[in-house]
Image (cartoon, rainbow, N blue to C red; front, top):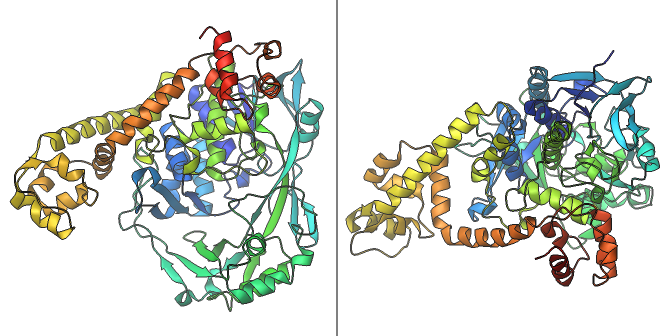
Length: 621
């Protein structure tokens, strides 16, 4: 009935969709298995992509040939570049999406791919022979053969939904949980655990009074995620901001005795940086209000997502408390918020390729690895999909370094440190933030996937060459162009910067903190005439590179030092137990995690600098 597939992807959420596309674009024949074809790429939580550090990840996914950025650009209802008041290393794109259009666009792009087939049924087990994964088993007993398998089960593995004192099995509202896989993996020797996440109530937007809220518009000149040619967004839907108050908090507290989070019914740990509203009130008792973002779900629906009000309290308590929020006095609820517990597997059981150590040809991606967020899941899916193909093709694993991408930081953190709570990416986790700016993702990463043979990159490569050529010309212009006092002094006076008394190179003016390329073009006609032919994004990237050249150079030097350790390889069968000079903890951790390089070994918790020095001696360095 079934051919032998190169790659079977289990689960069609954000991780699964990217895994399927990545493997297919590498040339593998892929089967995407999902319990429900109608929920492919469902935005289970908020209807948005990107945000702080997450926006950088989406741009990196796009630069690596993934589809998340393209889908978001086609379906966005609002776009904002966050943190523009800070340095460019912190700038993070974020877009609100039309939830239904987002899923439909993803499904259409998947169905249009000749290398992707689909199967709608629960996958209840793996076919494993002599510790090699050779297929999957379905709920009706079918066995589908495959040379590799990628598990992207999201919150469905033994998922348990909590609303107050009620609990019932489910992987998402209205969908049943997936069973069988966890039990088999545990039998194979995998370490599993439980985690928790949650979602807020959905509200009828027709019943809200927006005049009592703060308006939050999109950018006047909205940007994009994808480096390809995607449509501009015309009009944008506004979001709104409102706040809880002491009355809301007191009402919520009346349900604490029935809260599954406080009475011990939920065993899984929730995300530290995206807590439920009851958790916020409990942990931050001194605060008399918390911010709520009122986000539209799309163009053709009145449904509203109340970002910041995630809750598993009884539905009557959620309802009574929300009616005390300014603007929500007459609100009607579509459905209450809930918490969901699910199984995950410690990611220290994975190689850098996201292949498991215990079973050859089996890869994990997304929330099964203990992460939270669409973007983190999609990034892992893309890397797992590429590496499943590389495994089948008997090629070297595709591994992204920490100095090359936030995705590299994400995976490196997971496999070396593991996680006890849902892992979320932040800019602070990356030590090379200036090198990993969102505007340079294509320059850093597209050549990497070209080098391993990914197909369908022609437009990306053409646009990349144009971008690099433009930046080179812009840099040269600023270095050679002289500007006279009478041309620039009016602008310098206006921004409170010291005026000049003789001609200087334009680059020295741009180096001033209060000056930007945009300001120069708006105030000096000659500069505007010379630079207006260039794309605004290329001008911005050039400006960032010139302004922060010294910092960029320092980070490159640091990255080079770190990468020298990455180039010192360690054999998987290295006998750490025989090196008595290593600390006992180092011997234990190194034996368990089997690092690929000295650099990876240096980032394992419990391995000290002196342990690394000893290892360098033993490998002849």
